[in-house]
Image 1: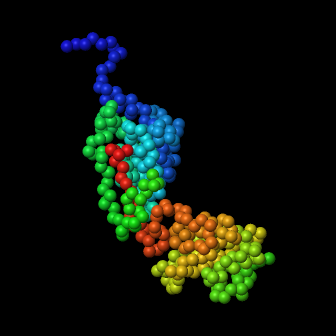
Image 2: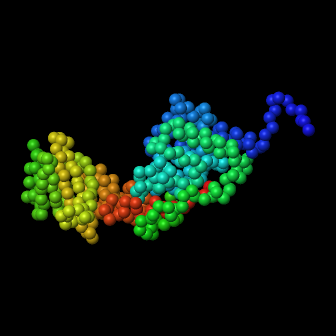
Image 3: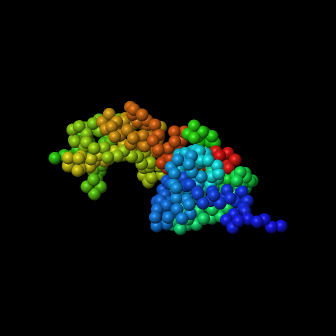
Length: 193
Length: 166
């Protein structure tokens, strides 16, 4: 069976078309708290030119963004803010954990610093480095684009798969020293959120 | 000219129990807690040490030869002659109270809040003694030596957001 189509008509799946649109217009939300933020700015600036990948439109309102780039360490006082900003972003949304501190706490293994944001919010891509070079961040964005193109659906069904519901690392992975104090048990920080 | 050492001698003659020492020509005076406000008022209003550079604290737990737990340090400067003076007050549990220096220096407000936050020393007469760095729900004083470096689980105990929830 042959369908006569003009040369300028391409047949595709709607899912792939949506993913193609999404992956080439990622709007990053820069959650930059430390030196990784400087590299993030360099990535967006003219030499590395994130605009080549359609991701140069940094917006400082989570309502307008669909890619959160957490660049730098997140302290426990900041975490409710981070979670709130993540909740304020519209679906579909993705998260890049940029640098050692955001991914694991880095050298800051102290009481105040969260040991990896993937314990508390979903993370799609990790960038190693302290801080990572802009090329590494660009690579992460390109990998994320591949991921979006590969598994994206127009209804966002890929986000409801079982693998994406779990925090990446178990909370028991790092030992909790002593007993959590009563005021810091789960849920006490609801008022800050 | 008010040499810091002369001021130190004057403090010694004014208050019982004060001691003085010197390190590389930097003058340090240790005063009892009950005389602290008198001494601060004297060094500010009469000796001319008009700038409160910092208030900080040292935890001497497990420190060799230490007899008291905390040392609250007042770093003062005399802007007219660029001279400096260090005042130190030793405290032990359970008596962790000091008079506030806010009536003398407004700038002591946040410094005392930081010492309160990190070491749990309360300043009597402080207008607004709240935590300044840690969240208000935090219960410990993290710069004390008996507080574990990795905390008591505070950094772990947050609600976890999954894809379904956000």
